[in-house]
Amino acid sequence: MENKLQTALTAAASGILAALFIWRAVAGDGSLLGLFTGAALLMLFIFCLIPFVPAAWNALFCSASPSPDLGLGERSLRRARRHPWAQIAMFMLLTRLLLFIAAYAFYCLAREAYPGGIFDTLKTVWLRSDSPSYLGISERWYVTEGDPRFHIVFFPFYPVVMALFNPLTKNSFASAMIVSNLSAIVAAVLAYEVAALDMRRQDALRAMKYLFILPAAFFFAAPMTESLFLALTLACVYLVRKKRYFWGCVFGALAGFTRSVGGLILVFVAFEWLQDLLADRRAGTLKENAKTHVLRALCMLVVPFGLAGYLYINYAVTGNALTFMRYQSEHWGQGFGFFFESASTQLEHLILSVNRREVSKALGLWLPNLVYSFGSLAVAAAAARKLRPSYTAFFLVYFAVACGATWLLSSPRYLTAAFPLAFAVAHLTDTGNKDAAATAVCLALLLAYLGMYANGQYVY
Image 1 (spheres, one colour):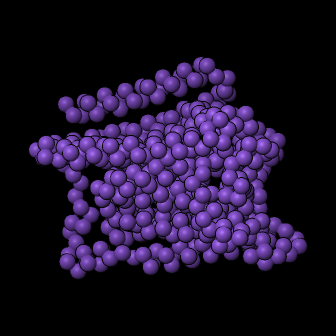
Image 2 (tube, one colour):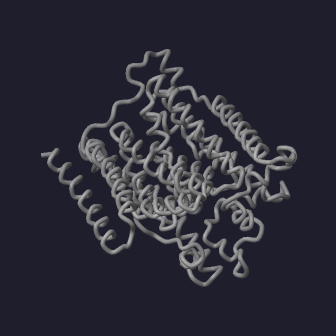
Image 3 (cartoon, one colour):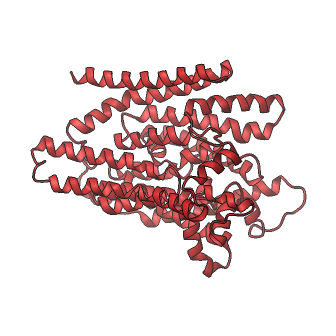
C-alpha cells in the first residue's frame, strides 16, 4: 500500500509538471531545440522527485535515521565530536587569499601594460555585476530619482550590515569585502556543524570543502549577498535541527530580508516540524508535546517577516509595496516563470551568441547557466536517497523559483548559494578517487569561471 501511494504521489507531481510544460509549449513560440532543452531539464527535475518521494515518506512516516556516530568507538567518538573551527577558519582564510591572488593574476595576464598592485586593482577586479548597487544602498539608502532609483529591486539586509562598518572603514567597498568574507567564514563553520548532524567528521568537512570550491564559489568572496545569505540560511537550519525554532526562524526571516529566495527556507522548517510531529504521533507522545508543536508552528510565522519588511520598504520609499516587480519587468525584462522555459530561452541565446561569434557571451553567460542548471539537478537526483529529505525539498523549491526567472543570468551564483548542492556532492564522493576527481574538476572550473569574472566577461 505504501509503495502504491508513493508511486501515485510521484505520478501526480510528474503529471502536473508535464501538463504545465505542454501548456506553456503550446502557448509559447519557442524553437524546437529550445523546447527539447526545457523538456530535458524537466525530466531531470522529475528524476529528482522519483527518489525524493520515498525518502520523504520514510522520514515522515517511518523510524528515524540512525546516528552517524553508530559504529564509532569511544576514542573515535571523542575525536568526531571535536569542533575543527580553527582548521576551517584557516582553510577559509587561505582560500580567500588564493582567490584574490588568482583573480589578480588573471586580470594582469589579460593586459599588456602593468595594471598596478593587487591592492590597487582589488576594487576594479571585484566590483562587478550587482555589487555597485549594494554599495550605493549602503551609502545613500534607497532613492526615488535617477538611475539609483532602480536599486529598490535589491534586498536591504546586506547593505544594512555594510553600513555598520562604513564609519570604521570610511569605504563602502572595504565594508562589503569585510562583510562578505567574514560571513563566508561563519558559513563554513555552520556548514560543517550542519553536515556533522548527519555525517561523520570527515564527510562533514568534505561537504564544507565543496561548498567553497564549486565553480561559482568565488562569489562568496565578492561584495555581493551570497555569503551573508548562506550564513543566515545555515544558521536557520542548524538552530531548527537543534529544536530552537524561534531563533532559527529569526535567522530565516533575515535570510528573506537578504535575498528574494530567502523565505523559501520555510519549506525546510515546515518539513522538519512535520517530521517531529509525526514522530511524536508514532511514539504516542503527541498529546504531551502538543504545546511544543503549536509554539513551533507559530515560530514559523516569523520567517515571512523578512519579505514583509522588504515590501514595507518598497511602500515607504515609493508608495507601492510592489515597485520592485515593476522595475524588474520594465528595466530588466525580469519576471516569474518556469525553469524549463528559462532553459529554453538560454539555449536559444547560446545558439544566437555562437552564430554572432560572441564567444565571451556564449562561454561566460549562456553555457555556464545551462551546464549549472542541468548539473545541479543531476547531482541532486543522484544523491536524493542519501540527502536529508528536508534539504532536498528545500533545494527543489529553491531551484524551481531561482531558475524560473524569465531573464536568468545568474544560475551558477544562485545555485551555489543553495547549501544542499554541496552536501549532495559530498554524499557522491565517498571514496578517495571520487573525491580527488570531483575536487580537480571543481577547482579547474572555478579558476576558469573566476578568470572570466575578473576580466569583466558576462559573468553575473
